[in-house]
Image 1 (cartoon, helix red, strand yellow):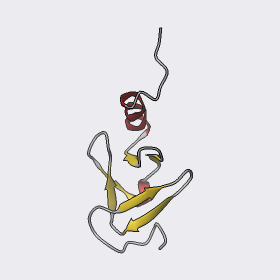
Image 2 (image 1 turned 60 degrees about the vertical axis):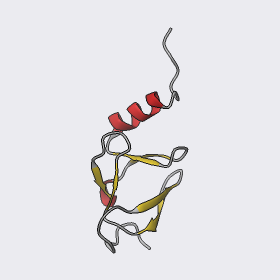
Image 3 (image 1 turned 90 degrees about the vertical axis):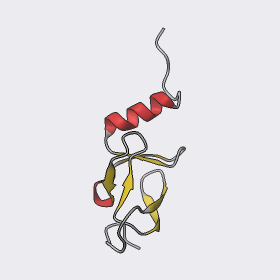
Length: 75
């Protein structure tokens, strides 16, 4: 299935890969793990392969990294 095909409404189930993603269950969008906002598949640019989560923007992705303890601490 092409990621830009619109075959399904509601939340898609995605397998996030290093530079792309696979649609496991078709849908029109995914939900940001930080903000809860819907993200159209055509607009999906930020995700975590390790946590298998999508993020609405770079700020949300950064917040997720901080929450996961994946960033070095200052000090």
